[in-house]
Length: 147
Image (cartoon, rainbow, N blue to C red; front, side, top):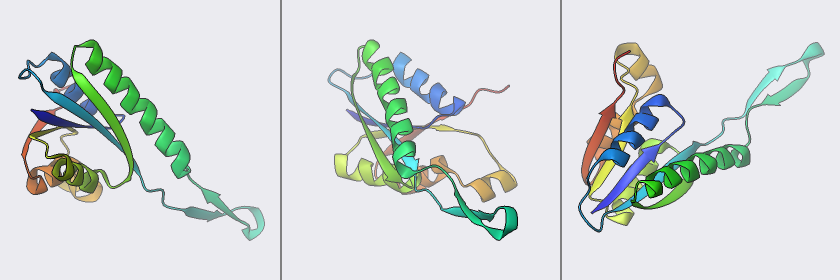
């Protein structure tokens, strides 16, 4: 079984990884951890006297942060005895998860959910909702436990 695990640096992602770590998967299962660095959007603003300054994190810094996260998750899952590899892409997590599931012929995608509803979901979007709708395979959404 090939399992794609989408991660970011959030408590709901940690919960999904913990779920995957504790689950009994069929013998020979392989896990592929994916962390997607968002495409940086250049933001400029007026400084003193009308000077313009760029504000934001470079794509290289963002990529390194996601690589560190993916490596940490990979280590956690390997310590649990799971065959795991990791990848980092730069783009839209919704699109990249679905595309990687297609190219890798994943049997299952596991993602966490922030549990946003209403306006929050509309404004921020939902990776989990998009993946459930567009994935070529089954999707397991691990919800964040109630506070």
